[in-house]
Length: 423
Image 1 (tube, one colour):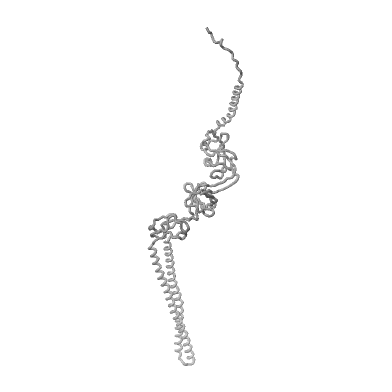
Image 2 (cartoon, helix red, strand yellow; image 1 turned 30 degrees about the vertical axis):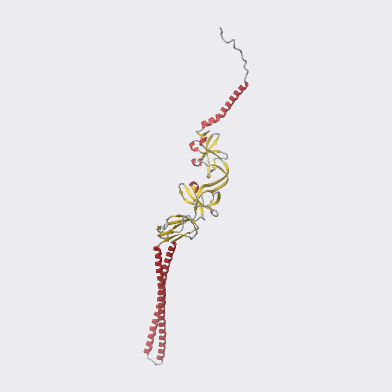
């Protein structure tokens, strides 16, 4: 019987494998180094208040360089001068132009037919002519009256002179004893009567002359007032011919052809294409920095034009403020009403300013703090920000050039001062 296999076994010489030992030793050493390096990081991770994935955050690096504050938005072309024509009187309107027609200044746009106004003008003209006749008649009557008064005064003067001569003659004759004293007394009475008559004639001439002057003046004033009324009515009748106040283009027609309108009703609008501006909407936060006269750029159709802020609305609508830019120089000819253009307004420009990319951290912290990222940790640090632009914010204190901070997503940190950022 075969008791076991010992007779078949044989010793095999095993040679030492130095390469495997080196591999095991290197692996062990690497594990020790990894543990040593991971210990500080693990300690930091355990000291963090919370942990947030880096994919949920946006980061920015603090840099130093030029800082430009500007506002960029889309604007539309509007007419700086766009008068609307109104009906000067009630009546039927006959349009002489169509929407979009090019018109010149003082060109006839529409005619309003107003029989009432035309008839009133004719009546007032007739009244003015009658008043002119009355004024002329008053002048003639005044001349005749003055002539009669002057005649009475002259006759009274002649009678007084004749009475003086008669008295002198009777007095001489009386002195020589040729006539009685009664004739002398009678001559004196005649002289006194002639003197009184001459005095009253002179007074009447002066007073009646003033009265006649006032009458003539009253007639003249009444006629002048009537002439002014006629002139105003003529102006109103002339205004029935609606004319263009500017060179431009007919915009919108507010009425139909031959429509009957009331006084002061809208008829049509005229757009002055030689005075175009660009209107833009500015966020309320930037509106307080806007001022009339600030330089800007207007671009479109592959071209860029210089402009200046010409107006800023004092009213805030839906969180925005309307502003207008005027072209600095001649207005481009190829632009059209309501055309969309890109607008950029330069608010401020400075060199060597510490800035960081603008993010939600400015609004979330009111610019009082930011989270500085270093070795996978975000540490809260107090900062102070200054001016801001569309894409950058000025750093006044708390950060230095090269610092990396969380610019958005920090709202998930809560009030944590130390936050671990995982990959």
